[in-house]
Length: 152
Image 1 (cartoon, rainbow, N blue to C red):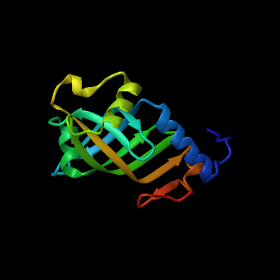
Image 2: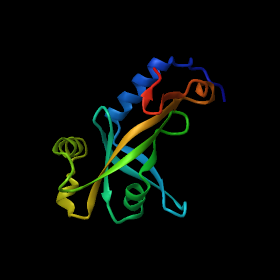
Image 3: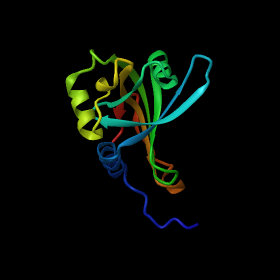
Image 4: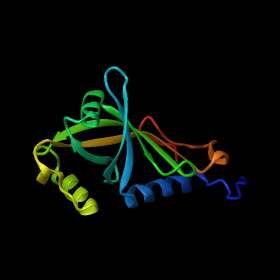
């Protein structure tokens, strides 16, 4: 296999990441329980410019892991166009979630989890680290955010 695309500048990678966060509907959510048993599921999400909002049942493995663990790794894309986001998690019950987050989530996905019952919670993921790369030739320079601050 031959790689013909030029390496993107860090500023272009950041623009690409932000565009994808606004456009894509699904994101892979990785979490682990207290014993370290991993869980990986795709969930709908919305990006509000500062955080990624997810919703799932509070009592399922992902909901429990996010609530108790307080952190997650999220992934967009396939293996040749990767975005990884490591973030801290804050949990909101259906009656506690900010209205703007629910409205944005429902507008993007067409679904308001609050209407599916009180068992659904919302999870606000604040990015602490972001990596993005196309193929091996972009591995250098893939760290776009560290410790919650954009490097570009």
